Length: 450
Ligand code: ATP
Ligand code: MG
Image (cartoon, rainbow, N blue to C red):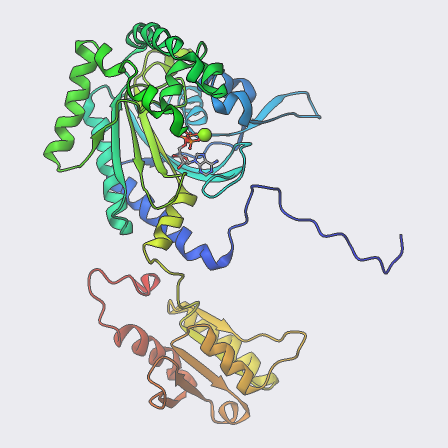
């Protein structure tokens, strides 16, 4: 190979976007807010591996689902022949771990998780091949109260994030027996209109007809709207559970619509299903989906244990936060250290450590290929960093053991500059930044100082 030949560029995998520093603030804000809301309801974090045995997902999610039929990243471990899959969702792994470690031996558990999921879908807005979910699973609780709790928890999160335009759709899909009776009538009905069904619906007609109700094809809307409704097939127990959920939501002033066509793409759900939906994201408007999955744990060989959970798509929520006006963090640091000369550089680094000890964020100017940079160019960088103060150390400052501290955020022309002895510099900037800022209870500036 010729030495001059330019190295071929390697790009990221299609549908697996990088999350860049410009968005880091939004991701942290989402994750911190979600985590503290989950904590406020007593949920504990669980972290399971990204890779599981393929048969875990095949069994948990069900063979005739979008995910297992065509979306899984499955592979053979060439070292030992294990059949493995990158997790397409979080519930299967959490349930496996709950059973493997017998987490419910001393009673029910409230759990939450977050992380990457992988599905081989057609990439488009709001739909990626690597994406992130934030989810909760409440394992071992039977009543409608926990279903409602999960919904209240979501509402609190939307409120805390300042996202008003998310509406709740609710349904009950009963139990397996009730669905089986409905299924007979549904297939009969759909067969009567078979010539009007699209290829997808025809394919599902005898495998997973319930999913046809979920179709996004506008041409099928009338047919599915007039189809037999699962709600009409529910027995007394399922109905009472559903009424119980609705009553708690009503008493807590949660708005919702009952959408009788709402079903879940995953086989293990029963009774309560819900989705939080927005119109602001185009076709990919569901930001959170959840429901009860009482049969799953027994299906895994555990003793019958009811469970309910939800998963939210973080990418879609980040996009909503952006459209609601949430912006990137304006400041990278509190203090930017500008220096000229060898001794000034060392003094600046010592000072930087002391200011960080006091809890402030400090960026120290460092040399690049273009050199150390003039005072002027360093001050430009200080300005662009969003720092409140530049601390300047040159030959004179070093000789006098005094730093020049310049306020960067005041109005033009009013930006004060003070000479402060080295020994007092830390107290001076801490005072100016924390003392000068009237920190109310709901202040979200400089969290790290508290
Ligand atoms: P859809 O019908 O849109 O394919 P789904 O039923 O496959 O959704 P779930 O498995 O319930 O979705 O996942 C829960 C949430 O995770 C979704 O509501 C969505 O917000 C998010 N999500 C699912 N798949 C993707 C993806 N490929 N890219 C980004 N977010 C996703
Ligand atoms: Mg899907």
